[in-house]
Image 1 (cartoon, rainbow, N blue to C red):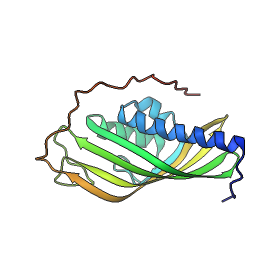
Image 2 (image 1 turned 180 degrees about the vertical axis):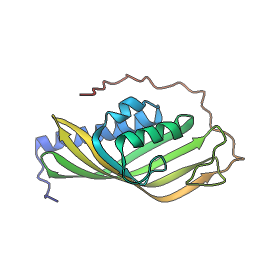
Image 3 (image 1 turned 90 degrees about the horizontal axis):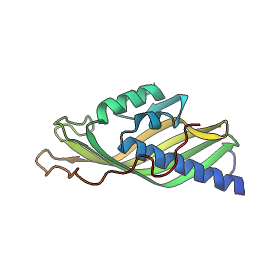
Image 4 (image 1 turned 90 degrees about the vertical axis):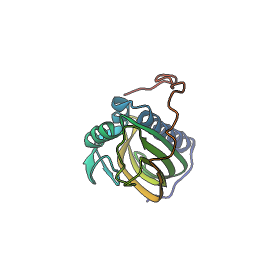
Length: 174
């Protein structure tokens, strides 16, 4: 990897990548599948997800996530980004992450058989490419350090809360 040289442009690019990651978490949790898909390059691949096999394309990942998680309650938090640049149009990052996945329809997660959901901790490893001035995901890998099952006899999550506005902040699919 190239040694990062901090410039005003590098700082702006870091913020754009952070925004891309924030949109990934929000669109996943609010089930905005088309918007989620627009964050990926067409040739992007994924590894380590319960929603798609290793090497799946972005389209396969979105199809798998939407089928698996549409009726699930999910919360994804990513933080403590370590972002480095491999050139002016390429970057990589490691993000600490926590996610909660709860199946409200009785299914059991493959990550925690016998449970109704789980809380997981780990890391995302992402690769990004800038195409036509816009940063997109080129590769995404999820590794988990810990998974805590949500027992079937635990009280169900409260889901009758005020929903987020889909367009509170601007989103551009360019």
